[in-house]
Length: 428
Image (cartoon, rainbow, N blue to C red):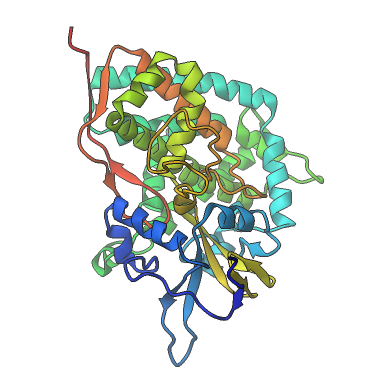
């Protein structure tokens, strides 16, 4: 029986599933997944209070969209569930948006449409073909260096290096800038979605913003240089793309680069790291993948992304009254789309906690729920993951994770700080 939609009545959440409490995100991942399963059983989206009411301001909070159907529906209704003023928690301050420019993920039509058309136009078939060749070369070089240097942590030596080098090559970033960029990415993203102690904030206030500012200044300089002397890289294509007579200006180029480096590198890095953990924990799936890599690779990548869900959630702001999931939302409401929960929805995925590279169909939401904000970098991410594991599994190495990954405890992304690993030759 369908439950009547309700307006103004807020669904309480189970006490163990307080998604607004930073302590929830420090729980072991299985406990968090159990809490999401409980939320999916409710008859309408639960409401979470982020800030209690005071004399000067009303209470602030959000509704959690946790089912596959609700997340997909909201993703494909941008005129109702808007990305502006921001999709992250907390939303970016106005002065930050003024200083650094708007990120595409925080835009709505028509600005988002124009920016996305500029970026899509820049990804020419020639550019993507060159990127495919480069991805294979980078994968081989990363694995060669891994074998020669025998590092102990998979994240910096393999998982981070692969997408970082690919994106730097694609963008045309000179070698002299790369070490500094890598350091700035770490500073800009290390605390996204993570509750920081007062001591940590006082020791180095604004370190992430300073890192972003330096990246923006560097990109503005490179953009000016490529306008004068264009090459075959993505920066040249972005600043010279002719969509309605316009390309990306300096601030927009800096915002796109920050998005590509922080989101593209971080999410692919985390997917690669989770892939090694999952293949170690499921040796029969690893054996199946190795037995016929080209047959199973696409399914394996999709299942890694579904199972690990590198981006946990994005926020939306309601612009028009709309009924969804048994609740009537009104303008000004905040909702959070939990991809990590939608990807474990048992009404869509049989045995959702099982890692199965043959899962078909696999309509996961690891790259978003569709609509105008579907991830532009999904093709590159897939190619990078496939190329790296093709190299890793083709070598005579007993590659495996050693111990559990060190997770960041973030409410935004499923970030891995470190993963000890080994890759001894197999026993004769």
